[in-house]
Image 1 (cartoon, rainbow, N blue to C red):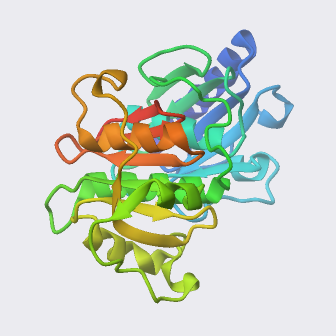
Image 2: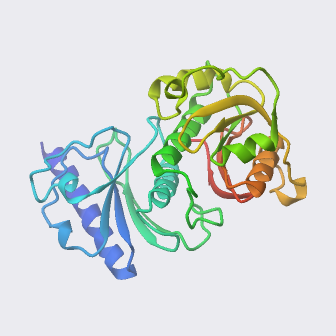
Length: 300
């Protein structure tokens, strides 16, 4: 009982410190990792603080007393849902930053104070400040303004989370490498060609929408094949096994990256699409826009 009380007190101190730091540096928001918290009630009203509160979780619904004015779940209107896989603290912060930008919870140039921990410990044990206007260990890409482009935030989140899950879990325990090219599909199809028979042809659009959870295993099976997935801006998977012919010169992409990354850079430089690339060798996920890497998330 004494240990449990101590943990609650330490978590409360971390949250209090996060808001104090946010006020001093004029951070846009404080992002709290909700999964380690057994108690969501914070006795000092964060509603009075200047920084906005964002809650981060792997759960579909955040537990907590929404009727209690001191509950974090009642005080936060903004939630970020993470892929349901184990994540390091830094990977969690990177993904949450990317999704916060895509959902326009924050803008490029804003600062966020993160408070995170491991769910198994029940403790918030790390405080980290991210300035989205500066290059850092977290922000490794340029062009973060309007990071999702013309894509709906829920589509951007679904493809990013799916990419990260595929990178970590692979297919039947084996690593996979693939590309999801999302948006501006008419031009993408004009600049690419089919390598195999289209396995998605002939199915109703509602059955092949990437937002439908039941499609995940089908995508996992086809991710082992060469070529890219092409996804429309409403989330419909149009095809897989697509060869992207609009490649850039290798010198224009970061050294050490392979043909998938060159292809993703090429297709996004000529279209308004966004490409999510899973590296088969490292398991890292990179997001391309306008021919450039705008975010790099290392495998946990």
